[in-house]
Image (cartoon, rainbow, N blue to C red; front, side, top):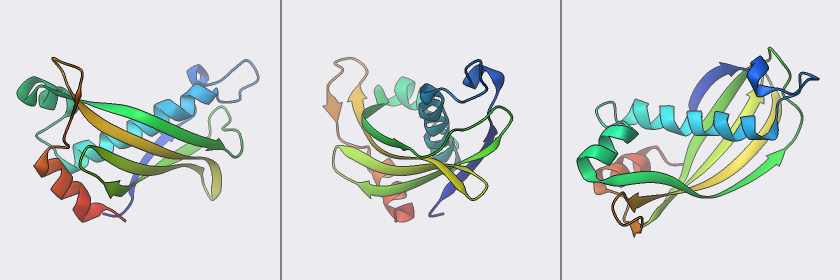
Length: 137
């Protein structure tokens, strides 16, 4: 799996009064894409289970987003998520929000793990790093 694809739709709650998707909606869709990628790769280790069992939280360190064209009410969209690079303390993702062949937005996301207790960075867990490296571009 080099690309993970998640289908969704632009709902009324994602839009303004004119039926155009809010900028925050793209961040939510991207989060859904990363979460479902994680679920697909680690069916027994959801983010909540990882937090409870290992005491670590998956967080976003930074996001760069380029809005290309607006998503509109009722559009069928697809969130495409790719692991670009796995580092000692972070994971770089590239994501695209698509409407058919139209690119609505592209994102570069730097994710990391922190201790639930101290809120300080921790290394990417070995099993996660190894699995993500196998699917990285």
